[in-house]
Amino acid sequence: MSRSYTFSHAISRQPSQSIIKGLRAVDTGTPDLALFAQHHADYVAALRSTGAEVTLLDALEDYPDSVFVEDAALCLPEGAVVMRPGAPTRLGEAAIMAPTLAHFYEDIRTIEAPDFIEGGDILTTEKEILVGTSARTTSGGIEALRRATVDWGYTVREVTTPAGVLHFKTDCSLLDEETILSTKRLAASGCFEGYRVIHTAEGEEACGNTIRFNELVIMPSGFPRTAEVLDKAGYTVREVGNSEAAKLDGGMSCLSLRFSPPKPPVKA
Image: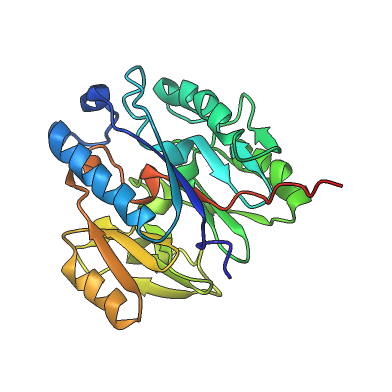
């Protein structure tokens, strides 16, 4: 059983009314709140359809981008690491997530100032943790994550996010123990040497952020050629609307923390 995509739990957060004020690299329009809510509900339903327990948190109106919970923490089988987001308006989100994580983990570690790191830049595979430097994640943040996870047995490797790409995982996803879905521009850097790479179809780079969650590959709808490639490769694809999250640079991985918490200690 793969610990990198087999999960018993997930955490997601309801989108807030204030999400229309969310950060975006390019303004492609204001998110439709009702449609965003429907897409989010479909996403949570897809997670739950695999048998996972999904904790759905209330919206945080003071944090417009808080629906993108992945940036706040990294959840591993051994423990959780609370991130330190690189966008000033998002700094408080990580601290707010910590009490929820405490319901599932005894060992919670925290990235401290002055370093920055966001979960959207972190791809955990069976071999290693790849972390891309970006406008939101610094080399110091990556080194802090390395120190936080070394005694759990993880190897952290720093890679480079392409210029103009918000997060490392904007352009890639884990499909299984050996396989990465990636845009050609990211794969060309050589960061996935040793893995099998499936490229997103030409013109469909925006579906690079997809998630493998138990038996499903959950991907944004509207990318038929990439979906066909994944289907022919033997993956069970579930498409979910993402048009409104995409207006805020959000994708499938951004909307949840996915994990299997440690088993409770056996009492003597």
